[in-house]
Image 1 (cartoon, rainbow, N blue to C red):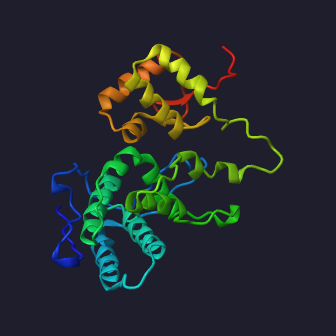
Image 2: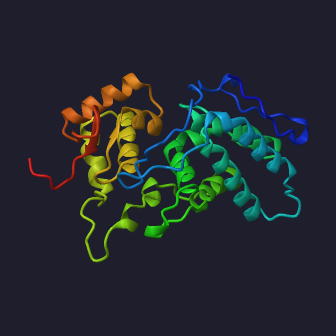
Image 3: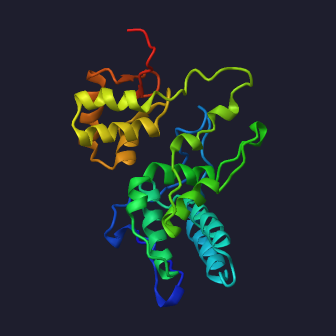
Length: 276
């Protein structure tokens, strides 16, 4: 399946297709898909994308609306806000069963270039997990618990990308678990260890590059967050075989521990005060 809708901006035709040569796309979804994201409370899911049967009509509609939209006389803040809404809606369709976030990123880069922005994939590669989770937050509502969809995190990412600003992009800021905790209860699960102590510990055991990977994982999976090999490959962009090896090394050095009841190959970082 080759999806080739185009917006036709400035005579260029950015293509939403994995056959572009940049990334391998997964299989297109055969029906509704439902994705569990680490930043959501257990039992919660991201909004459902449309079914495969509705995919073409929905994409045609979204692209038609974007084609008609005028950026004339808009401030940069307004442009970034609109772009955040556009890409978050596009991502939510989840065109492919696997690789939709990467496909969306490649298409978005091409589209931004047709708008005159000089962008590369560097920021996407360095902040892949943040980009994905900011897209989730742009589509997720839990009104009963006071959680509303917001593009504020995605807009910070876009400001770094388009304006060369330097906002800190920390995954822990997207985590909504704290908002769901009962007031008055101390948060004993998501405390962040002293980063200096962490660096000192892993620096004695691992090579510099591996230590950097571990710090990225700690940032992406704070506290008692559960993760597995697919999550690792997305956060630090390594091959599955290397991710398995890294998880094994971390478990052997008692930096992470296996978690039961969540499927095979699931882990969490050990807490500093956990009894041996």
